[in-house]
Length: 614
Image 1 (cartoon, helix red, strand yellow):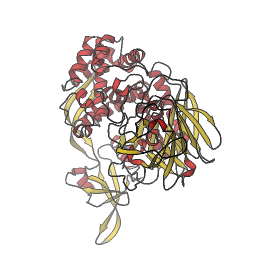
Image 2 (cartoon, one colour):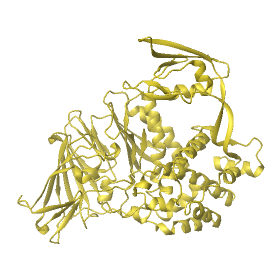
Image 3 (spheres, helix red, strand yellow):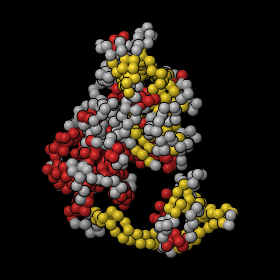
């Protein structure tokens, strides 16, 4: 299962370090049972009682994490090392008395990648967690999982020192001010900046390269050395060049880091994917074929990198001054995730990384995905209340329905401005208007977009984002010469329409044949058949999807098809070769998308603007 989530924390302007900064020390050489000690020298305090906070929720994850449960042996001390009284008042909050005397806070942090007593059933998605694996020489450090802040002192500067063994090296987008072979010192303007920058320490496999005016870093941890940083860099280079063109010619950041952690056993969350930050993204993926991993990173990176636009440069007050304990959520997930997802597909179409049919296939898939959700409230209301259980279950729709909103919005802008603007030019204008240091008010965004475009665009947003009206696919896509049909019937090549599943050995087998069609019956699939080969191509967990998709694309009716299976025959396990001729069967396709053969001049014009050909 793929799970992609966003984390983007934005802060305020840079400031110089003074005596009121936090000084944090994390010593990776003193780990104990997958725990690491944390020491925090706090700023001078001028009140009697304070609260120390660990993050309950971090922006972009849209779920409760409760990082306070990973804190163990919490202590508060004065300058002489005497312990001060404190009380833990909730999972993520500690009240400390005699705060004017408070000099230092210490505790141990548990590893969220592994089970421990008190972990509970709320497993942390690995790209948003902490891995403390001294025996393997790798540490995944989402800083918000290691470090908290004194309530009321979140915007003080932070200085972070990490001690480590000589054979490992850290990779991050944080500013490094000094280093030795066993110690690194980083600075952050405030807690938001600190929490926005994950760090990965491992035996170094790091590559850097300048791309479109930015220094791009790739760091890879692969336990069995199936992937290297050079592999990844070679695969994302072309994509990032295309993204720079898409964003106006240069990348709008001066640095960017890809931190990639591969695992060779099941993850505790059962998921894999990435978490996005302002100047970096952190990936946790299973070790598999190097080409497939590189392509997966490329596919995810196409989405994640565009978060440098939204919400880094365009974001609401709720994100700008995020409350880590009791957050108020923004109304505009359609902007942060949906527009970003659409851009990740459109950039690859616009700069010939894949063709129009591929793009339409992705959009059709999103339409089918959206059908799984009960879309009965406006997107603004859904976003604002995303933490409610009924809405949290619909979270995947921000990538499906949100991207479809963005597609229709893009075409609406192009048509209504006669090609003078598109969605990307609108985003560039909004980035200039706001940027990282200025937030918009949630309730004013549609009006601001209308000021930058026209009334037709404003009406679109109020109708299809601010209310629950369904998107008018036929009308809007038709402007660009794309025919939309809610449902169509056609004859297609199929694999037999059996139900596949995985057995204990991670092999693909036939789990059901109740819906099997005539071709599947001709081959003679039986429940329990383990698929070994398809037309001579090996079938396993890594190759199944690609092999079957190639079969669909390359097979004609009447072609000979052979499938090698393993099955039980009269009490003995045997390999059996199934044979049949490929057969087209009638299939009902929802949300059909096709390019009109003879578009009108106006349709050709809008299509050309949309594809960047005008």
